[in-house]
Image (cartoon, rainbow, N blue to C red):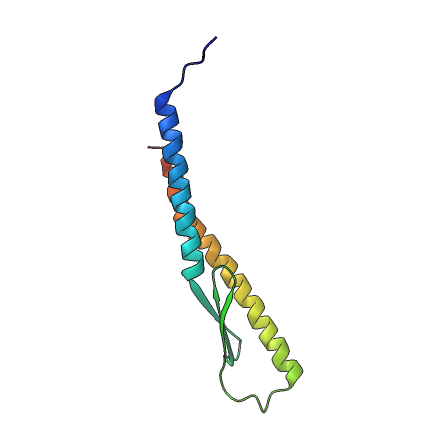
Length: 108
């Protein structure tokens, strides 16, 4: 028994696949381009990360002579951890922004 092929369904499936691939590319580019900066509580350390979590820059404001190495290390580690959380948050926002458009495909 031969099965009938629904050409319209196949065309729609191909178009949806193309749209998903386009959105994935948009998301990947946005994640690499979007940057978030986080500061330590005393503003002496600034860590900038991409939304993918890659550290793009670390800036130290002020002098380090008065800081104890262990204290500075804890502050730097905490700021980097905050930057990682900010990158995760940025990825979620970008995903919602970009893939939120995908929901409308079924409505079309």
